[in-house]
Length: 387
Ligand SMILES: *Cc1c(COP(=O)(O)O)cnc(C)c1O
Image (tube, rainbow, N blue to C red):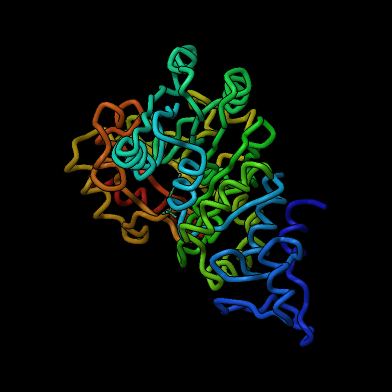
């Protein structure tokens, strides 16, 4: 079956009411017919639901769909993308361990690596996506894992997944990919040996800016450790959010195609504007990592960034003159969104790393939505004219 069909036809078992759509299982716990059945379910001899901090039918359905998409056997759904990132790290690390990380990571992921994990004796070395030959020099016998994000938020750095897979294999590192921007519709990190794949479901998986959510999927033995950590620390997704997210996945392939087509048009339109210094979009032929993007992604995704030829006041003037685009930090919404990363999502990042991650003061991020592309382009054009 194709992804599109799997996403629409994967469903929890029907109840005795023979409902067509999956019901919402708003229940904190599940009952047993006998003390013996309860004992055997708790000891894993019997399969079954126990308590919604552990699992729930709505979460199972969402997880199952994501596992099918990412070609991984197991998963856990979390209350936010950051809970999934944190779980993916702490489930495998102990005091003294070392992490290799791309410097182009989501702002809060940097905060975990720079501010939280060091308190527990875990250190990090950042590597520059554009200096691949230097990565292996940073690996020590304490290095446990590599974490990358591609395309990165918001610098749109493309990390060579095949290179990372080989590096992790050679040095026996866990390979973790934040696949939020591409989604498994455009890119499947498992094809390159990724062991764990993380998503902020808040973005394209939901696609309409309604709920927070996250998910981590991976190999069976690794996910056992993640699930142990998650069950006993409690960052689980709500059944209601899982129900919404599972329904959203039915349209993910259609939406990603439409986001990518609109974004390519916006990127081309921006490229022809004289007030713009640089446009970044993975599928623009003059993009520095165009070949790599073409190799590992099937389409370019919905995010376009560009650098205005001007100072920060002009950047703000552009943003303030947009009539239709929303000024907000979310992305992956049906509505087009504008954000200024340097003063918002990535403002707390170390300035040196911010530069390496491609986030200049002039950089503007547009999450291209599903409105008619003519309307998106004309709103951007009129605002640029007022800069
Ligand atoms: C938004 C985002 C996250 C964090 O997800 P939340 O759902 O907001 O917690 C992590 N990684 C990337 C790449 C993101 O864009």
